Image (spheres, each protein chain N blue to C red):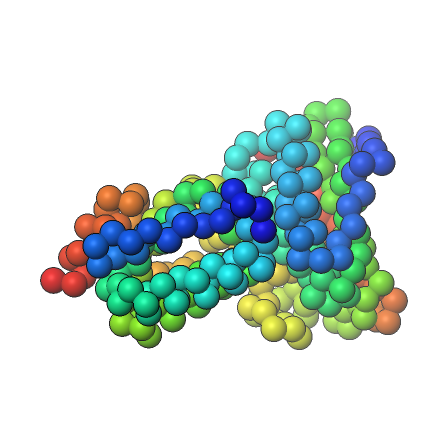
Length: 138
Length: 121
């Protein structure tokens, strides 16, 4: 059983470049609070930075929700990035290294996936994208 | 950009020392890129030491700007050495898929300065 705790202050809007700094600070604070080591903290914060930047780049705005997890054995965190942007036509392709439709290196999504324990994408073209990452204390 | 995040560019003889600090937003990173490029041109510096120990994360955007900055400094005829990347940041960059193999690196500022002098000889 995984217990998720969502508090009101865990929702953060993503609507400007300045939001990226807030996103990184919030995720860092949660990782520290959960007792994550410095490497796990850095990986999680970097993954969140990549995903928040994707929201800005492709959808202009969206939001991030942080939930702390406890499976009775380990503590973890689930971070959701939601937007109502154009969506991703081919999720499998978007997860491939080097693939990009924007002006980037095309490592955002596949790179972020490597930095966390789990990354799932739910996207509907024309309606939006939800990317959920989960990381557990190692 | 907050004042405490402002990045000083220090001239040491014919070299410039730039110590990037804090959680820089994209605008601050791009501003720094143009400030450094201009300083190299104005001071006719022959080497730039980019000291990154103050950065707690380097994501793909920041990494790309650092790589591009290094390329521009070289085009201006100066050498670049990157020092001080935190171990957790280095591990994360590699897993992210950014090797930065084309950058000259050194363990710390003293080694980096020595390397810059060596390159010129």
